[in-house]
Image (tube, rainbow, N blue to C red; front, side):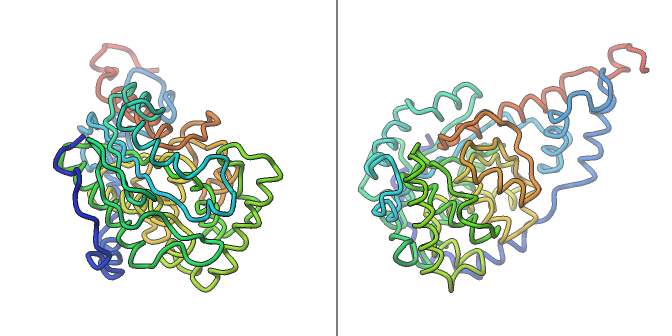
Length: 366
């Protein structure tokens, strides 16, 4: 953990405005197509049939385009895992109680969670950020940036104010910027928040847009009867917040979550800084959807790690015409899929830089 970011004051909503957000979105430019072509030319000259390493080649070429550097390595990996709670758990939409969010924060910090194991496997750092846990948390290594102690119940009204949504986006921007300043060359998104598949499904339904039933899954493992109740809760949330759902920022404030907003901020800052960001699963994709609605060009900077077992994730990829890297039936979140996919990005770049060309190896071309 970076000691420079621990126990900082709560971000004040007035620190970041809608105008600031719009300016950031305008500053994001497309990835470098010329560099991508140069990278692909080298990949095509390696000792293999052209295109025979498939998506590994795509990952390498896109990474070069994102960074604007042909000699792109991405050896320093950082996963940003944001924790927040959700008032909608009062509707009985989760199998686990809300206090599990804080318990899992301690598990992350102790290195015992799934994301910790997979991050160690690929050589990534995990930073844990409290952006909106319902209770007070004080633990060594925690980055404390709480905007508010959990959202309000979206089935009864807005999750948060627009100023609070902006503040949570700013938390993501700041923590991404700090990680990059500390040497991170590729970022991964992660989250923890009991009940957070419900606001994520609500955002998919509102912003794709698609019927609620298509994007509502079993979350933490609820039964089908409970899933139907969850559908009804989300439909109620969309009904009571209907006036706020036409644009991405008001929709995020109305039916989203603090960790979802922070992930949106990470993606925007990564794109502005020309740093690749690996998007985790269902909840992270909700944050990515908001970011893409705010600034469509950010898609150039995103690697979507996997298709979650949560049924709405497939709908997201279909509607956005995107393709995930992995299909492993993961549904844990935390940044677990992002960690695995970071290893694939690393592998693609190692192929590009360490594999010999035909000329270097003295191999005849077909």
